[in-house]
Length: 97
Image (tube, rainbow, N blue to C red):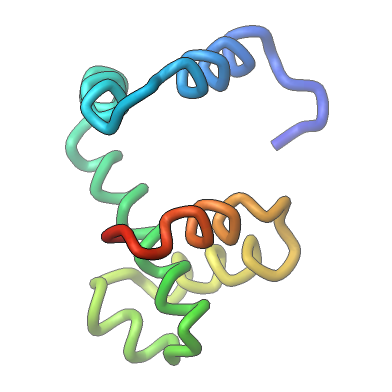
């Protein structure tokens, strides 16, 4: 995403940061996203976890149903991204992520 982000995107970030419980997060995301969008987002997080565990693209594709293009994109973010996946996975360890 571009360095300079629009005010609506920043407002979304602030809204997400304002949530205090899993239930609040669930309510907002279910209001904001379609079921397919939520499934896609959760699939990408699962792919990131499996990549972090050292699983192959083939195994990840079989376990998650993700395309190799999606797996490659997530891997690129893990290697060259801003650390969002890694941070989320580290903070979620011990929880069902």
